[in-house]
View 1 (cartoon, rainbow, N blue to C red):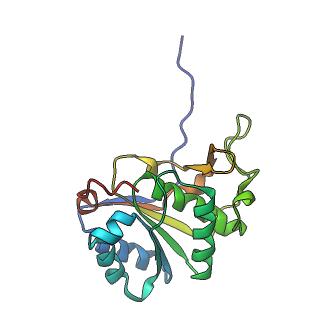
View 2 (tube, one colour; view 1 turned 180 degrees about the vertical axis):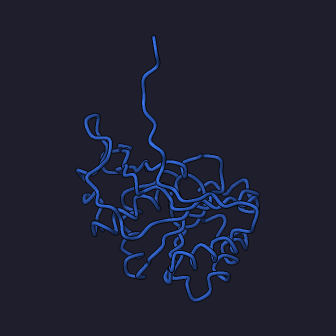
Length: 197
């Protein structure tokens, strides 16, 4: 019996490696014409290493703001808070620097910004269901770049796992354009074993 199936190629432009993340991100921001780069970073990387500061310095005036409070299990409360802050910072590019929770947060933040969802309940109706593979999201005007610190692999897909704390429920949110435009691989970012979030 033949195997039947399908594969959807991701809407990603490139995977960049072989150069330090600060340099690679600065070049990508320039290539994309981004002027307000909003960083969502691992708290460990931001507070116990100089890796995030190197990135901020490389971005210079393009750096809009940094958020480093994503919990281990990405929550609706946090992503809607980040989305409001990113909108207020006039972000035109979001960058996730950290593990799977940080990357998932950045993906759904794009959609919260696009739909002006700044309260946790605003995500109701956008989650993936057995009958609906992709939520009814519009294509976001603001896109993201991922700089992973772990081997979770979440940066290579277009879905995000987000916890609804009130209902104690994890939900999947998915849209093809939640996929990062670029992924930057830099071993320096992965050196810190405790940089999980």
